[in-house]
Amino acid sequence: MQVDFIIVGQGLCGTFLSHQLLQAGKRVYVIDTNKPFSASKVASGVINPVTGRRIVRTWLIETLMPFAVEAYTQLGNLLQANFIKPAPIIDFHTTAQMHLAFADRLPHETTYLHQLPNEQPWKDVCNYHFGAGMITPSWLVDLQLLLPLWRQHLQLLSCIDDMHFDQTLLRVSDFRVQYKNVTAKAIIFCDGVQGSSNPFFQQLPFALNKGEALIIHAPKLPATHILKHGLSIVPWIGENMFWVGSTYEWTYADALPTAAFKQKTETALRQFLQHPFTIVEHLAAERPATIERRPFVGLHPLYQNVAILNGMGTKGCTLAPYFAHQLAQHLVHHAPIDPHANVQRFSKILSK
Image: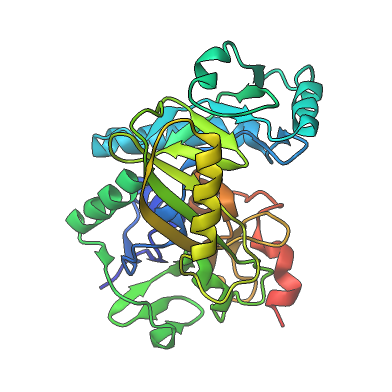
């Protein structure tokens, strides 16, 4: 079989890259093992324009957020589904210092930070002692609907195989790549945490970390907002269902859920929420983050038909649509890639 591009992985990166290349009229062949607990599948789906204790704008958010909203909307129109909706974040301050930090930022960040118009309804739902503010516009992406629907679309086009990618079967020459009976102009690795052991890209400064979350059923909790009080409480699939998390563990024995997280999170929820809830599921996954918190995008400096789209970390919903577009434009039209994301910035270590 002859195609233009082989794509390894169908998380958010592989989904948007295959979509962009198909839109450009290219033939793609996607290889993906349909694992239930990849980082994309257990992520909350939140697009938050600010970050950190200093509550500053996330990198490139003025460009990334409108692009992402349009990209999710377009993909939803194609698949006749709604993948994205506005979801204001209520930031319940956990300390007096956090309350002061938010108040100090308010006059300087009038686009995304706002005073909470009416605190009274939330006092009947949550226990908090240091006030609250609001972050908006912010968005919620339904990854649990998007990823399987795009997979079905690829299946209808006969351009995805549910299989483990065996690196030993890949053949790379100057003018083409071949995997089993598939020949292509190039191969793009959108393989998430597997990228850290990929022989082409394992020298890159990945910083894998583990996240855990609970899925709870909370009948009296409003599903109109995202709530932050140390943990995030995010509307999830199903009536009165919520995602609660997440941790950032840098040292861990495996990627499995832990009893310690469940106990700590359940205790925090019972202190914060005034209404009963039931734990339905406990999730965990590794994230393909990077040391410098910038993605890896572009062609290998030595192998010009081997590329990567990876390292989105906790900001995948925000970053993946934009950088998938940049990589697709680079592959098809030789358009530039943002130098802060271009994997060529590591050409020295990749060329060793």
